[in-house]
Image (cartoon, rainbow, N blue to C red):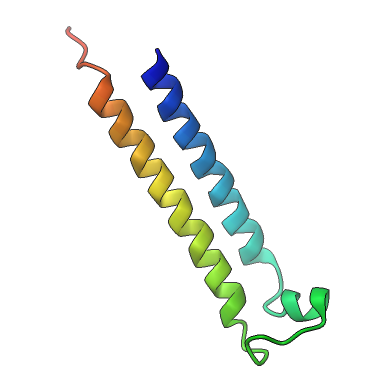
Length: 79
């Protein structure tokens, strides 16, 4: 039961990271410049795309970790 809960936590974190990536993706390409008044990427949006890629990488990593942990700990069901 504890292994199932641990795998569920991984999936929850993956879902939160995927939602964060989606929210970053729908923001305008210059939201950092608009919000903070700085221009770290010279207005080309590369920093904003980096945040999307980072959130997606976290989502994929935690989803894969949750799936592997669940498969590792839960025995196969017999028919």
